[in-house]
Amino acid sequence: MFTNSILLRKAVLIIASAGLLLLLGLPLVALFFRSIETRAWEKTPGSGIPEAIFLSVFTTTITAIITLLLGTPLAYILARWSFPLKRLIAVLVELPIVLPPAVAGLALLIAFGRRGLLGSTLESLGIVLPFTTAAVIVAQTFIAAPFYVRAAQVGFQGIEMEIEDAARVDGAGGFTLFRSITLPLARRALAAGLVLSWARALGEFGATILFAGSLQGRTQTMPLLIYNVLERDVDAAVWTGLILVGLALVALLLSHWLARHDADDPL
Image (tube, rainbow, N blue to C red; front, side):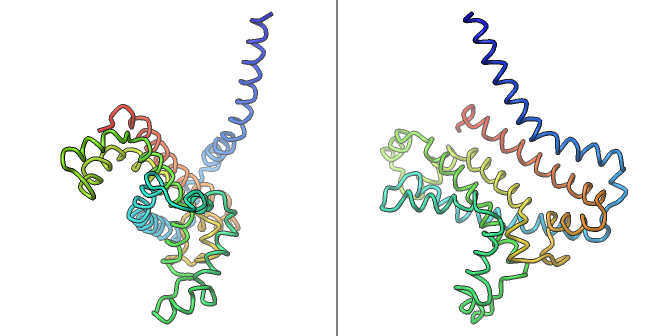
């Protein structure tokens, strides 16, 4: 009877897991087979795709650099410092992860639009963000940076304090300690988080279309191109979508590989 109970629980777990795997995997499988069935690669969306690919790579690279430079200090502070309202700040940093895309785009417009909170100040400095390439980068950073900050925070928290204390005894301190000890120990966690953040920026759509629009060669990234092409040719949209899926898959596999090898190769 006890054996039957174990088998029943395993069966329930397998069935439930299979149901979710089917829901998650079937759409991607369908996309792949649709592309083969219709030879979707022969129906590319024309001249828009090279510009969209270049713009996506360019903006996500800038986004990754900004995220690395600004997100690493923030992640370290959240991981190691104790101060008032720390939990609230941590929640605010991670909020864009669960924020509806339309709300994220609206918030960016209200903050940085011409009539927004900082719009007039930026305009007086000759800076106009909405519907520019810079707006794409801002939208991507707003949505994707929290993924890196969270991963980096976990990476810093995973470093044993005894290692840094021993380095201090040997005379290391301040930025030297951070650069020579802390960063190398957390490098794989940081790299995994950065790759994941880049992949999220690559797929950003909702906040971008509201804040930056969809102007070919200027703000039309790959996800926006897919949305526009879908109205004219589903098969062309399928092929464009598969390019994005491939890039995202490579990024995700790299992120998993880095995270998996973090414990095996801490130095």
